[in-house]
Length: 383
Image (cartoon, rainbow, N blue to C red; front, side, top):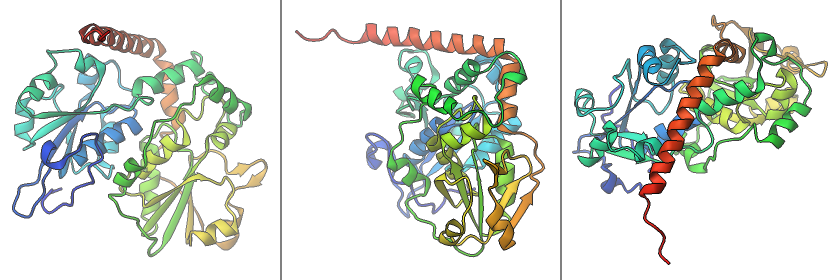
């Protein structure tokens, strides 16, 4: 995809002065190309936020994702294999161009190869505490920018939540129809923490525009927890049924009651913004109702309701959730052709529990060491 003539996103980054940061898009000036790379495993709102912040600093965002071999070597086993990670990234609204199997560690050569002006990286403590990281050297020559890191959501955090809630077998990965009191327990213990979102991030995802429903409106709903290629395949298939795809994302209590103790791993807001970030999705209903009513269908002018063959819970407390659209003759069951579910992702982590425990321990130790180094570097307070 070319960046020529592309309208820039609103600057949403801290200190996002366009001229200062290198963002100036005039008819006679070459678009500013921004590079961001990473493993992007268990794609989440922290990744999405960082990419939109990076996109705001230029006119075109080129995202590079590392191979399984590189991720394994530097971080530990990826939960999502590269073909899944690559597919998810290419489906995002904010990604203008994608590079698969990008080299680990950004270099001048990487930027030049892809015609990028600079790279963007999260301001991780491990990066700020190091003077040997490749990004540190790029900053010295004004070819790197740092953006604030999302505090509450990370790949490590998601894995830790799953490890904490599960045993060593797949039988411990959650029970469909588990009691809703588990949701309250999760909230009280702090196990279910959402990202610290701002309205500007949602604004950036829409590129400052509100998309009015047009043509045939298709509606789907679900949890969309631990977003994966199974979800993506279903949404893309549903989008082909019309010209406007509206997605309802259920709240945390509904998901916990239907899917059991392990779920949701991510809060409704985290899950909804992830869905909203997709090219195939026109809009999202936050906290959508479990049972579709006539009023709901009329309000959103819905022409077709779709459900995936792999989705859990067509019934809610004994009632058919899709009774009204079925009676209207506007219900369709869709086979996405992809069998991967949120349960699949949990099972992958449980089956390799020891490896992920070790991975997270190393990551946490590195962050603690970096935080200590930064503290030691800080000047003593004035008295």
